[in-house]
Image (tube, rainbow, N blue to C red; front, side, top):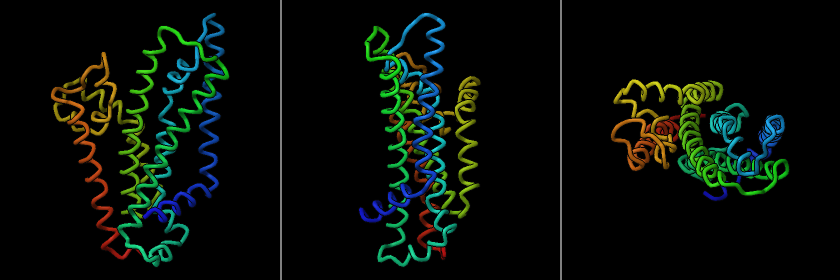
Length: 254
């Protein structure tokens, strides 16, 4: 299994678009820093690295979309490259091959968030310095909630795109549908919460909202708890992945 995961890492890193994803995240942070610097300079106020990291967290959707692109192409790209047959000739079970691809997808999602977070801190230090202020502690709480919420969404949407890609062999459809969910999900969850639609608490973007469980957060739907959200998240993973596993293992995928 480890050798399969390492091999999947090599495939992703060897792809030209992967390098541009990481470069794009650096450029995004630089643009955020330049924008915030100009805004604060014009207002005559300062900031620090923690404040900038909180500010840059407002565009975590970009990281999420990049993660979806990787997830939605993990299986279907093998068909596009016509390498699926040779992959299945390896002395490994199909279940292990798909498991390695899924674990690699989740790991790369984590890598993207860690890279963006570290890049935000470094950029913040370079542009704004390290000074600690009274609001820094509160900003750190916001950063944690924002990253955990976005990562939870990315993991589940990545699983959705991965599963759909496995079932359909079509990365464009898998990525496109996951993009639509990513772009509209939070707004839909807020609307369901506003109108107190009871079944809204089972919606993916309701259970991934970590902010509602932080200090001062407002629970979106009655009866929601961290344990409930975790259980629903696991249920979504099973719902997405079980059909993909069955199809990949049992059907003729070549």
